Image (cartoon, rainbow over all chains, first blue to last red; front, side):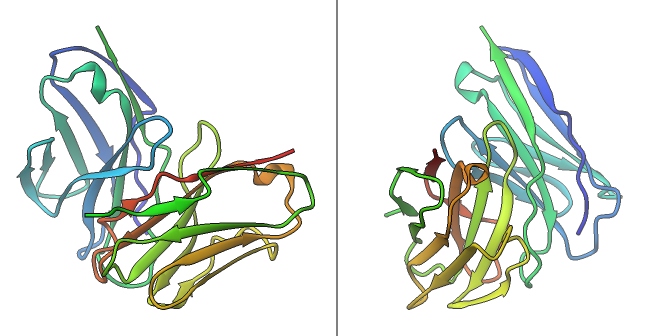
Length: 111
Length: 114
C-alpha cells in the first residue's frame, strides 16, 4: 500500500485559495489519488479523485505532476464552512486491499 | 436518494456487555466497510465486505469483534464483552464494486463504554 504524508494542520483566512499537498513516493501504476473531507461529528465525504494531470469539479481541483509522487488539493476561495479534516488516499479502485485513511490535514479557516 | 444509514446513532453500554451496531448501505452498493474513529484520531479500518463475503478481516482488533452481512445489504458489527478502549465512533461506508476509492459514509454510531 502506498503510504501518504500530508501536513497535520493548516490555517487560512476566508476568501483565500488553499493548497494541501500530499506525498506518496511509492505510488503504484494502478493507484488512484482520492481526497475526502470530514466535518466534525460526520463521516468523511468523497470530494475528488484523479490519476494524472489535473481534475476539477464543483468543489475542488486536484493537481498531479507527471511523476505522480505527490498531489495537491486546491480549494478556491475558502469559507468558514470549509473548516474540516482533509484526507489523501492512494490505492487501486478494485481488488481486495483495504483503503487506508491517514490522520489527514486539519484545515482551520479564520474569519 | 437514500444514503448510508447506521443505528443506533449513540450507544452507551456498561463494560462487559455486548453491543450490535447496524449499517444499511446504499442500494446497489456491493462493497461495505467498517471503520473505527477514536476522538481526534484518523480512521482505523476494521473489515471489508464484497457481497456477503469478507476478504479482508485484518483490521478487527481482537476476537471480541465480529461482523456479518446478509443479502448483500445490511451489516452488523458485534462487539462482545466491551471494554472502555472500545469507546469510539464506528463508521460504515459502501461503494460500488471496483470503486472502493469512492466510498459513501454513514453518520456513524458513537459508542461509549462506561
